[in-house]
Length: 365
Image (cartoon, rainbow, N blue to C red):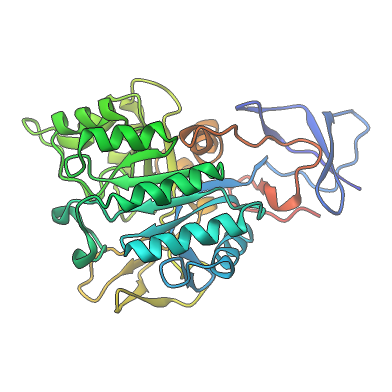
């Protein structure tokens, strides 16, 4: 048994002092008050549950679009767990109905895999004007067959997120999907503020990577960005310093009417824990100057993990550490209508994350 004596521990939604954690070979065996005679084997600055990421397109050299199989899921989840993300929502970006069906089959077959949180369909029901790196040829109007795919996943009690452009999908369809328990997220959208609010009324629960693949917010054209910020919906964002300027990110966070409605995502591609390039829709995507770009030099996903994202929020965006930790742990679970993980006996080592005083990961003995 190793005794961990963190300066701060994430417990019941806050960073707290005065706790000791007894850690065995498999994970936590006890969580108790610290005692004066404790002799710790490690003293991290923060001990917290491993991060949760609701947008992981790939990792470990595998893209879910290229390998929508149990083996592909296992590779992606394992690569993320090795980097401090304990729970992953693998993300299938715009593709065919057949491949959506394959990904659903794979998640159902793999259900129970430690770290697999569900499935995120990002598209294909997006606005072509805000396609980003998605394949224009596969962006389309809503396929009624998608209802069957979503129903199959929900019958298996698997959490599902569907990113769509609310101005491109009828309100009654959004409502039907939301009533199934699917988390409907607005993204890759050219919606006006009024269209975004109509989507929220219909059942939109979340927004996908705020600012990115959305029209710029202007004084007389607030658009979907202002509607998202002013709403009580959950809002995801990328914190790599490339997709959103730190000032704009901090501005959005501080402007929200309700606390703990913002969560960070990686938008990671296969280069996390894998080679520095891959093919998507037949196009080469590569790491260049710390970010992922396509042949035209446009952003094509992100080359960052959640632990680095968490550090960025504190160091570059100037957030309070407790606020940043919540964005990487509790809030993503709440966005998916799930209870967040707690540090408690039985929690595995892969589900615990220790950070040093510089908010970088440190190994647990």
